[in-house]
Length: 190
Image (cartoon, rainbow, N blue to C red; front, side, top):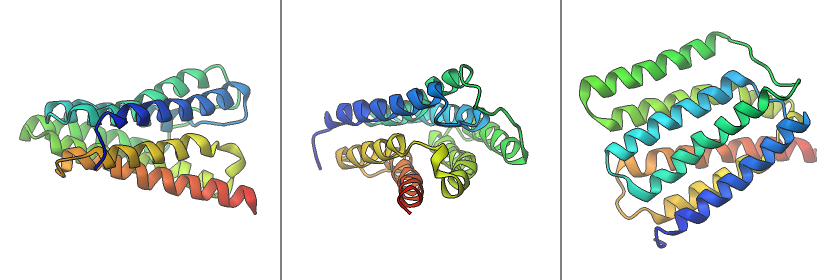
């Protein structure tokens, strides 16, 4: 394992990736769905708070950034005419899963339950972007996902205690962002 201070590098990398998508959103090149980006802000925030309660420490900064970047992009989307705000069934399901995560956290007093539901809900919220990245890669910016995936790898490499609360979000972020990067880059090169 590498020194846990490398998490700061992961945070910087994540932020830099986020700024590229932020710029593309403001220029109208990226077309974020506001509902998805709101949910991508919400679920990691729940996960971050749960990780703090479980004493995760510095590695929780990645989960914080996974919610912070979407917050910035969501705000920027209101300055872009190409952004979309459209509620669908999946959005309601994700919202229900988020509420379920909070309720289960309160009932069980186990932050790992909140982390699990946050990861699941975030994965559900990602489905429209995964489909869009596969079908219309030109509407996405792969750099944010590549940086997110690399940040997750760095964070995973700093973990010294392999317990669920430490690896759940970074592993999920690595896999999801890797998939999104693959779809966008593969289609753009084809």
